[in-house]
Amino acid sequence: MLKPADTPPGGSDRPIGELVSQLVDDGKAYAQAEIDLVKAIAADKAAAARTAAILLGLALFIAFGAIVALCVGIVMALATLIGPLLGGVVAFVLLGAVAGLLGWLGAQKIRAAL
Image 1 (tube, one colour):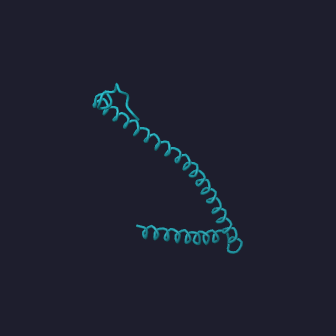
Image 2 (cartoon, one colour; image 1 turned 135 degrees about the horizontal axis):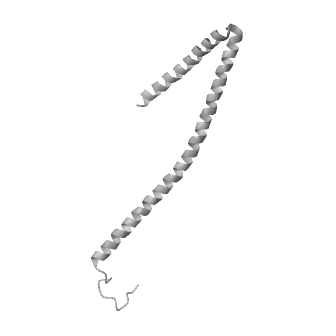
Image 3 (tube, helix red, strand yellow; image 1 turned 135 degrees about the vertical axis):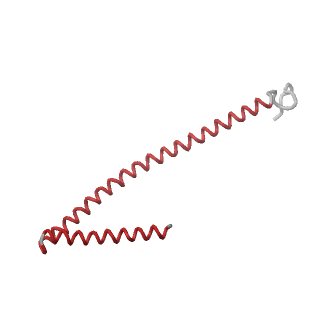
């Protein structure tokens, strides 16, 4: 496109210092807009993660209740066979061994990952 005839040669009539200042201000505004965008994206992901964490916590709580019910069932079943106290002790040892085995396997996996 052709420039109008009344424009002096060399382009804009604004000083270089003013152009540089405007460029710096525009760069700052762009950087601030990018930061605001990243903050908005992070806030959205955090809200989704918060909901997921609440649901996982509830699932863990209900699963813990199911495990307690299983333990009580084992104790009651053993109580009819060998008595309530011995049934509780056998269930404790059995479930403690399972918990120990799972803990040991988890520790081995962590050591292998590191």
